[in-house]
Amino acid sequence: MFSQLNKPLIMGILNVTPDSFSDGGKYSGLDDALMQVERMLAEGVDIIDIGGESTRPGSDSVTPEEQIQRVIPVITAIRQQLKSPVLISIDTTSSTVAKAALDAGATIINDVSAGQGDVALFTLAAQTEVPIILMHSQGTPKTMQDNPYYDDVVQDVIKALKDRINAALKAGIKKENIAIDPGIGFGKRKQDNLDLLAHLKTLVELGFPVLLGTSRKRFMGTLCKVTEPSELVTATAVTTALGVMAGVQMFRVHDVKENRQAADVAWAIKQRILN
Image (cartoon, rainbow, N blue to C red):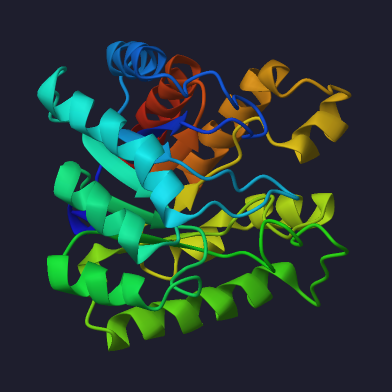
């Protein structure tokens, strides 16, 4: 799938959790979750990213059983009630959760631990030949913002991602099924996030599709003097436009309509530059 990407894709976030940093509790009910999916579909979403465990800074882990209880009814309903062919990614570090989600109709694995949370996840991805997104993080969600430090954040993240790519390939995952995510906000200081955003092209040049996830994140709030995450829609759309120009191919966002517009306009401009 990833080898066939052309126009940038918008991945809409659907957290069926009580404690996610921006929308925790809003979509934990099945009806509310499906209404949000329908809204995102109408706004031009390409992928629905469903997670049953918050990865906000300081969050506690959730058992695979609890994650399954949260995500499987939603995935099943999208396939059976909405009958939508939309791509669905399962946001989990657990092979147990990922397998249940794939069986229910998910088509992509989105792993914030890049296979380090559960070694069996790489085996599952290799056996099922589904695309997998490998994200960089420093530490766990519980500890990742406890004084993170890098000598050179761009090179350090690239080195870590290369290590996880090699591990994935060794496990039998095909190169064309691998995408990478620099992990904005995951064990990063404000200056680290800004440096990564300033060097997105360097990440793109690794030769794997890049997913960018800046949506409503706190570091932008400090720049904009905003404390409410929902007020960072415009800031997020700016990073989406910059990402398109740098060659990023997927964008994980809460606000589909605004980021769809930003991506489409930036893409049209980029085509004029290239042609």
